[in-house]
Amino acid sequence: MKKLLNTLYVTSPNRYLSLDGENIVVLERQEEIARVPLHNLQSVVTFGYTGASPALMAACAKRDIDLVFLSNSGRFLARVSGEIRGNILLRKEQYRVVSDKNASLEIARNCILAKVHNSKWIIERACRDYSMRLDVEKLKRKSQLLSQSMQLIRQCGDAEQLRGFEGEAAAVYFSVFDDLILQQKEQFLFKGRSHRPPLDKVNAMLSFAYVLLTGMCAGALETVGLDPYAGVFHTDRPGRMSLALDMVEELRSVMADRFVLTAINKRIIYGSDFNEKENGAVIMGDTARKAFLAQWQLKKQETITHPYLGEKVEWGMVPYVQALLLARYLRGDLDQYPPFLWK
Image 1 (spheres, rainbow, N blue to C red):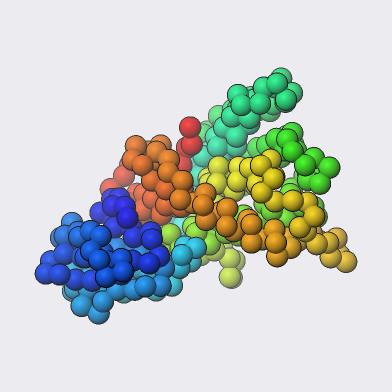
Image 2: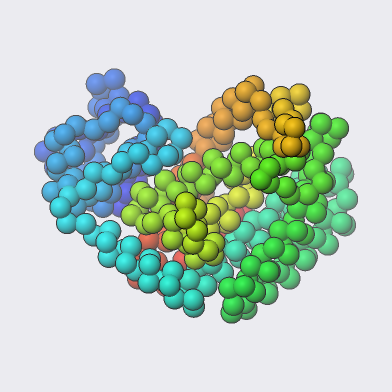
């Protein structure tokens, strides 16, 4: 259980929420775990299927406190809200920003800046931890190129130009991704990013991790009342969660790419657990997928210090914190959107 920015997060799936006077009571196996005053909250987010009492739902609706239900994996299920919805004002502002090229570029630039910063951090971390096993000089050159990309992104004043800088930086980053695979090299050879379909085992794992991360980001945006389909960097397309994909950009290297590298290097996933289709597509087998998901759930429970808030949060909570910060920026509570810049 964690309280951040006036939002109560109940992350354990077997906890039930009830009402006692003016307090939310958190129960586990009918025993009280905690109680939190309602007047301190703007929203409550609970993971899992245990649920909440009708009395608490009514109390939250009456006080205009969002009560959001997510699956254990972070997929959005439902939101209980009162007759008057403050989220309409937030969504109107979101749609205004999306329609304003300069306003949307300001957010998009921060997201892509964070993407390149975090990609650079992955390379720098590898140089520090495995200096005797890697071509450090080569990796440092790539890191320097990413630093140059960050300077260009900061000064970028055009959306198409920003997409060009993002693509160039991604090419630099993935050009040394294979160097970061230190174990099972024969089974996990990476020659470049491929998707729709993934053409090798590493790309199959990356694509699967991105799908999981996109679902988490979409659930986080729904939780705070934002439309995950109205993006600032990815263009609108029917059925595409553009804003969720925007958020994925800043998190993909530190949450997805790093996880895939760990799964290979620590032999959590084996090369024999994949299947190749007639069209050349490579997909994860059932054994690999189950091991991947089990480890992904454990990874989400690991605690870090959020670089902007300075508070301890679980990795699985990071998309929800970023969604909250974005909503606060759109409401005018922050001067700019603070992306996730991992250190």
